[in-house]
Length: 191
Image 1 (cartoon, rainbow, N blue to C red):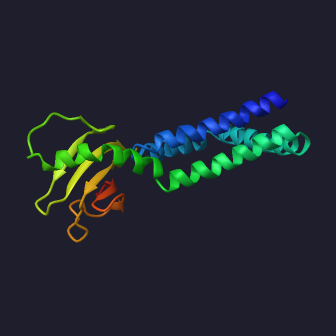
Image 2 (image 1 turned 180 degrees about the horizontal axis):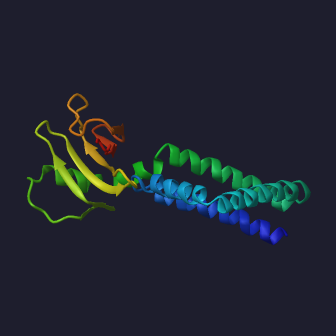
Image 3 (image 1 turned 90 degrees about the vertical axis):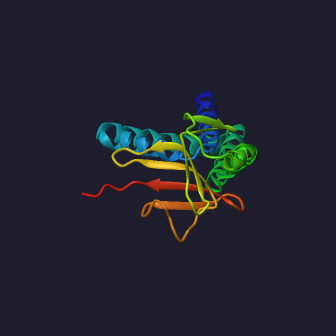
């Protein structure tokens, strides 16, 4: 029982490590969460089975943690890891670090005159699907396309103009550095 519980705790830590890794790319965790929710709620048997397993595992962890000192330490370490990883993901720290490492490539792409380049192209660690330049001076680098029925675009924006948003409703820009923003654009279907 203790080996299985230790394995489970390590598995949870590994899943949060995977989450930290995926949070480097804009939109990947959002898409993973969307499809995970769809998968769980489409089939009631899967939903209740997963919920039951989660509750049983939580009960076993609590019961074992109260009995054995080594398991208690591992459970506390796992809880600490979950809190730290969640804080890093929420604060977009891995994304900010990765973008800082790729920022020189993005800055170089801004200073280059627009051409009919073939896409996708690699800028730092990011695969850029499209670059849009607007007369006001804002430049948008689309890195991810997601969504199910209505597409959602994720990427980086250089000095986006809040007063003349080129995309309209569904556009959201969150600051990364002084001139750089992380953007999400949800295309809404109008009938």
